[in-house]
Length: 335
Ligand SMILES: [Mg+2]
Image (cartoon, rainbow, N blue to C red):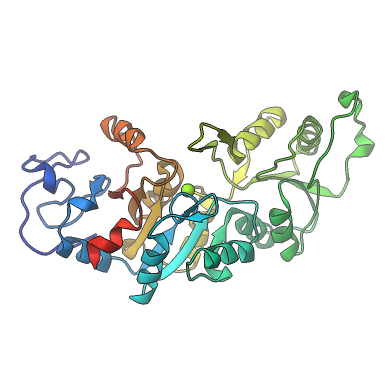
């Protein structure tokens, strides 16, 4: 919990209802702590309060897209803030549901955009998928709806795979024969696949007709919005298509599901002194809440101020402890 200096009055807390005295102090309780899920705007805190907040965590677990960068452009001030955290001794982990790039490629992207980062600090959904198969000692082959980066993460742990790239529709797609399926396949993995097609869905569902065939997905993010009104269907769209035609449920390794939580627990984080930063409540904040971390939502990516207001008014969990327009705003509040 976050200890603040000074005297504070009772504040609004819609989880444990208390007396509303001042909207400016909403989110800070009588014993001078940040109220969980209070959606407290850190811009309303004093410099002392923000400094106490920063002192309250030793580890930062941050999402990438929408928090640190957008479409390969750094979000203003994010790199300075993350590098400042590192400079004052915080441990940093970059936890992303990106399934298209290898850990080393994501670290290179981060470095290019000004973030100090190394591959060991990157926990991507592609890396977690490889780690999952390594964990269970998988020796068969994967049928992969995904990209080269995910394939390379599987190869890095010795898992063979087929399926990356286009699989074009033939004149009579329903004439596919069992002999066209690879008998060595023991798992179907679904990540982001720009070449998704009817033949791929047919093959995935056919492999999954065997109960012994494992079904793993990187993440369930449905869609991404872009400022130009284009909607990008996310990996969750493809996972649901395969779940529908296979009548199976995937094991999801990315945020906020059990496998990534187990992984984070295995690296020995002190939950109470860890801050999760994200731009999406259903993945980032959910992960933070389930892990017992403090949580910060930034409004520079997936969640608009209007959407947050709707979630807050309807008291729809998970809600963040604190909120900022963008991560870079923290630096000017604390320094
Ligand atoms: Mg994000």
